[in-house]
Amino acid sequence: MRFGAGRAWHGGVHPALLVAVLAGCGAGDGEERDGAKVPAAKGTATSSAAASAPASGPAAVSGGTLGGAGSACELPVTFELAGKWTAEAVEVPLEQGPVALVCEVDAKPAGSIGFLRVWTGEPGEAGAREVLEGFLAAQGDAGEEEYGAFTADGLSGAEVAYRYTSEFLDGPNTEHALAVTTPDGPVVVHLGGLDDAEHRDMLPAYELARRTLRGTGG
Image (cartoon, rainbow, N blue to C red; front, side, top):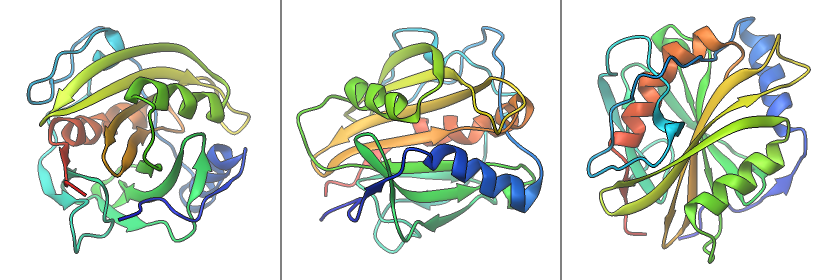
């Protein structure tokens, strides 16, 4: 099965998506860290402070599983969605480096403004860290990167916390992304934001996805 086909790279995809959120909602998402540790995925060992940004509230409660056959977005992996978050497949994937946007998970029904976005790519030799580095390089205006490594249900992954600057934002905001490689290609799960407070509020949903990440076996 191919995931993430029909790519057409647009260098401004990230700002464009932020503009769409601004136009529709007028608010944002972001995060600051204070050194606390996030919960580790099953069998996880992080290698840096990339996973150390704290969530502002309790762990997210599962509202269902995304990625399997019959779900809103069929992916090379599955993970649990936070309660009330809703997923929708992206009809025309937008490419960012080695991956393309194929699914958006909307936080608005849960009371936050923002998205957990899933990107997939073609099978290849690149490892998870290399995929993340390519993803950030294509996004541009990213700095203060802190990378970590983890395993989840046998999947070897990498994650990064970083600061992103854009003309569409009031200032640099923290964003998080993780990547795993599968037989069907790499998968990136990304949580961005329009401000740090919203990102912090949504961070438990990202943590839930990381803790429950599983391969579908393609």
